Image 1 (cartoon, rainbow, N blue to C red):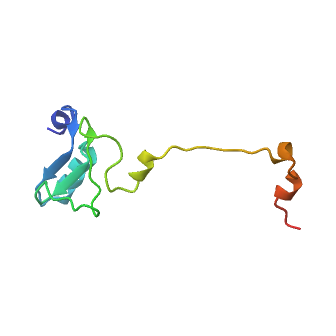
Image 2: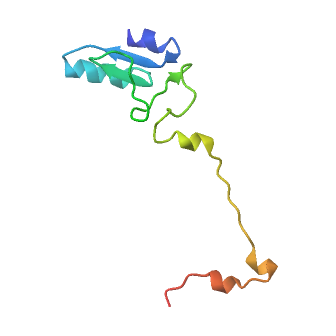
Image 3: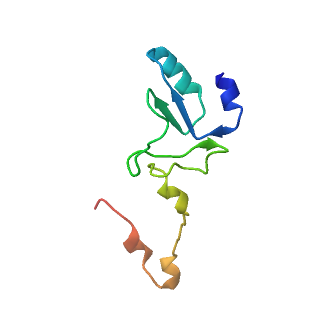
Length: 98
């Protein structure tokens, strides 16, 4: 069943009701869904508290509200400045223990 679910390509939410912890762990480790709900309804992520987002065809990248969400809006940029070329003293930029 897990393979059939994962093969759909969608993975927004998944819910399981069980009293057997080994079954819960087995399934949640293998299911490809952005949010797994155990023994509760499959709706109700609290905005600003629970990161929310899917996987596969249901996902667009980092989860909204998750720790990596803001990174999706950033672009890294490295700027180097040759201070000696503009008359600066490169020796002043060195950090020494003296």
